[in-house]
Image 1 (cartoon, rainbow, N blue to C red):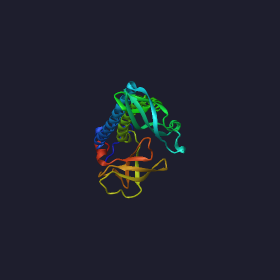
Image 2 (cartoon, helix red, strand yellow; image 1 turned 120 degrees about the vertical axis):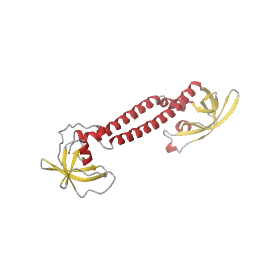
Image 3 (cartoon, helix red, strand yellow; image 1 turned 90 degrees about the vertical axis):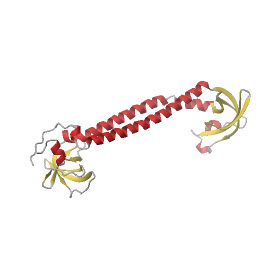
Image 4 (cartoon, rainbow, N blue to C red; image 1 turned 60 degrees about the vertical axis):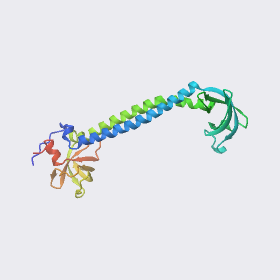
Length: 254
């Protein structure tokens, strides 16, 4: 076996690395599925925002009266919610609605018969909202488009970052990684799945303990008990074992 390994950086094409294209395709498919989920969530949130915006555009302020209230325990009322049963009229029609949300600290000062301001959409008069509580919440809702934009941008950045990471993980150890003769801590396991095993190598009389990753079912390039490996740049505790098939594809052995 004759070695003809060029110095780093070495010319390595993505298509030369066995299995790399398949792993990239899987990453793209998973990324697109993730983007689809994010898109569905954004569409749902967008519909909710439009619905809320339309409500506040159409809502009219109506006087109502408290029939009853349901409050949390006194020690839990700070920043908590309560519900009211309210009586009110729209277009001379009387309504009694239970479960109208409001702030607990506000509701504890409302007795039976107390007057409250309600926001009522004329197209849905039986779904009032307590005006003060609803307007306080609308401020957060108005930030929703910004949140959707940031979330969509973050999803795209994450997708592109994962693509870049996948490509670099396949190519950088071969292009720029230092090639070393690796001594496994024990016999290599006989398996058809990807193998990760502890090993070590020496550089300038200093022993470096690493974790080695080997492709399934491939014979590594050997030198006695040692195997050829590429140290992964920026991850000095990981190395990639160079098998004979890969080395021949790259023209490193003849």
